[in-house]
Picture (tube, rainbow, N blue to C red):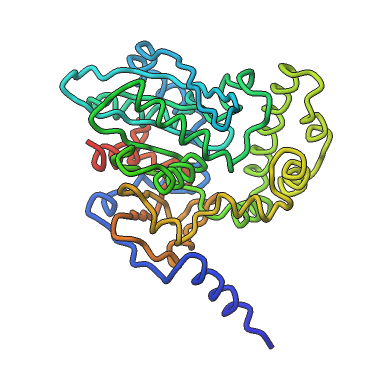
Length: 350
């Protein structure tokens, strides 16, 4: 009889590399939220809803007031593509660091977790650029074709354009969840010298496994992402009447069911599995990193499981910090909604 556990282990070792030793520093070890904040679902839900939304916008008021919207031309091969972002110059003219933030799937440059982190880096003296992925935030009108996660080239072109339009001595990347996945791939894809450093929080690593986990886990997360995706598709259809995404809106069922139709109609891939593989982070990619990458994850993340860390062999310039609590993009420290991830970012990038 075939040993299923051994077969899976062999697959992951060949794809992700040998097991890694996960280091912990004093800062990571010191993150211990109060008992009422230790539940993974509490951390995950409070990352972007409830009181934190109000507090994050309040703390980011100066950043928001001084930010200006910017359209970034990021097409290639004679294709016209525009992405929407917001730029805020540093209040410290001597500081020559620009930090670019990328949100998670169906998030935006207005997401609470992103605003909280961006405000923290702004207070530390950085210039800030918050970048919407295609069809996120208020950007659905800019491009008729739908967003998909394999559109790495247009995001890479956007990073190059941002660096050119807003010259700084150092440019950093920060990403959350799917945005963290993009940041890791960008660090592998972009040429040397574009990015000084990347820091990612709760990054998506294995889309196929995460989709399965969402469908088999707590129903609320699965419902949340389907609802957000359908809302985005409705917005697209309102702007482009007769858009072929209408068929997706008629499709009922799971994320996998929707993705089967989505991949066939709106991506260059033949199967859902091929699409997932196109943005899976593999060990071979990490050998091509053009800059150091820091990763923050929580053991209790209910959306992106962290077991992959035990199978991932890391180049010396990838540092992973694993903490016991934090959920998915949460890491909330106390009743004032101070955030450990914001402090971790400042420690890595300032």
